[in-house]
Amino acid sequence: MKITHLSTYGGYGEVGSTVLRLDQSLKSSGVESAVVCLHHTGHSTSANVISSGLFGRIGSKFNIFAERFFSKILTRKSSAPFSLQWFGRSAIHHPAVRHADVIHLHWVNDGFLSPKFLAQIDELEKPVVWTFYDSNAFTGGCHDHQNCENYHKECGFCPLLKISGKNDLSHKTWARKKRAYSELNCHIIAADKLMADAVKLSSLMGFREVAIIPRSMSKVFKPYLKPDAKKILRINSDKFVLMTSFTLLMNDLFRGAFNLIDALNDLAARPGIDQSNFELVILGSKLGETLPEFPFKTTFLGSVSNDEHLSKCYSAADVFIVPSLQDRLEDGVMESLSCATPVVAFETVGTLQVVRHLENGYLAEYGSMEDLATGIEWLYHDENAPDIQKEARRTILTQFSEGVIAEKHLLLYQSLIDLQPK
Image (cartoon, rainbow, N blue to C red):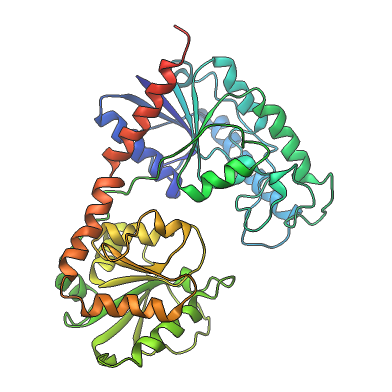
């Protein structure tokens, strides 16, 4: 079996790293796997770069920056990115693509596979799999549809565009994608149920088959002995360490910081809770933001870019708290469980996929700060904490390890190959 992955970036960022992990896992299973990317970042030694030579590299960088430049000047200031997909590069002439049994598309924005070049792939008459990491493939340009439902129809009246209307750029991009997708037969992979449900509601992709295959966890995220990990962070080993991330706290839409403060104030006022026994550790920096006071001693760790050190940070915690009410599965949940640290979070679509109530963590009633505090208190008093920690780690090993996720891909690839005319 020969699998070729197409991704804008090789080894760069969350998606690039995910693609390379899958590539390596498939190779370990005896599959001939290759990654073809638009841009080489220096970290992707195993990836094939489609833009070879000086002019090729210049062209790929031009596509990336031109796409970002025009998107920026045509959209409003927003946390949700938007892609026009005016610029692109064909991939069908690369040997690894032409000789593949299955072509696996990943994140192909930033000047790689525009709708025109996506349609070309169907000329090769090979099974095509496409993993969606965000909403862009089935919208008129946005990468996070948030609460907008325009993608259910034909887009238009886009809230992200400076000039918005029935036939705005989002509708025109939607129309280009519709024409391209009519010539592209592909099977979709969604990383979670939330994404799968959004795909099924979309006018562009709702009629296609969708498989749910989560992203694998990197082997770098593994547990360390808690006393040793706490020592690295200069925390007394007797302290019960609460951990969260600054990103979750400063989610303005769902008031993450205030959710956590309310829950911790509730916890601190309970009988049997000695505030001096607790320490709150926050991944990330305050960055000048003014936050209300927390009831426990609080340490901001700053930005942690090294995953090995980040694993030690998670391992130092006795509980990882997710105060956000968003439905998406936060990366910190998976990373924390992988490091044998239980998670306390609200019961949402995202957390329900991973956190098992009273087994590897605690799922609080949606929106109840009192119940969030109860989850923390349960872990603090529970004498079976070591068993809960082991179950957290076991969840990742049995459901989200690189080998397990590679096997799920292999089953999908083989089923598509078997459907090909003999």
